[in-house]
Length: 199
Ligand code: FES
Image 1 (cartoon, rainbow, N blue to C red):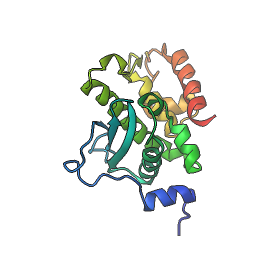
Image 2 (cartoon, rainbow, N blue to C red):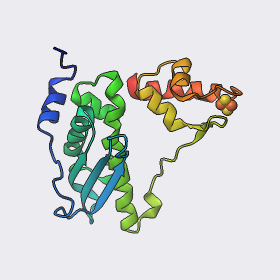
Image 3 (cartoon, rainbow, N blue to C red):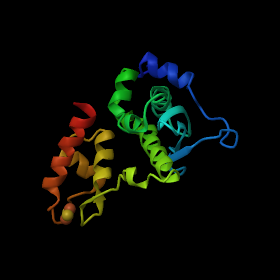
Image 4 (cartoon, helix red, strand yellow):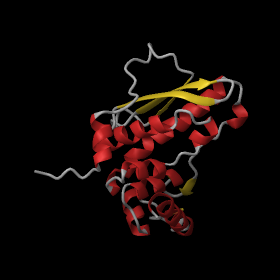
């Protein structure tokens, strides 16, 4: 039998996820964010209720077709952000959630960022619906390798999936396999993402 590789807290939130949305129609939300796609089976939705006077999150619900890591991390996230201002919640990092979960297996870390990304999309949705477009922060991908059209987000995903060296990023993305001019920036980003997610 294979050992359960997750912490007790991950197990608890996976078996008893908090704040799961049953029906979107029955939940009168103020904002909604979605990331991922159904083809990969990792779609995530986050819904928020917001105190409009204070811009504070009063309730957070979610639903996903993701794995145990995505379910447990979003369950924890949904509890954590209740009572936070929108600005505070926007800055909750996957590392904060991972620390609360007692860690995740390295190859599952990339699943845990789904809830976090959907939350930020929901906060931006709230700003958009409420005439606060100036507060919207876009997380647009930047192309790092022009030859192979590989973005910074793809490098970050490679790191979250376990790549720790330039060659490992290259194996996963094919970055730098033509002219090689992107190597310096790719190595800089590789170090930055390792530090952000695993240091
Ligand atoms: S820019 Fe990356 S291989 Fe040319």
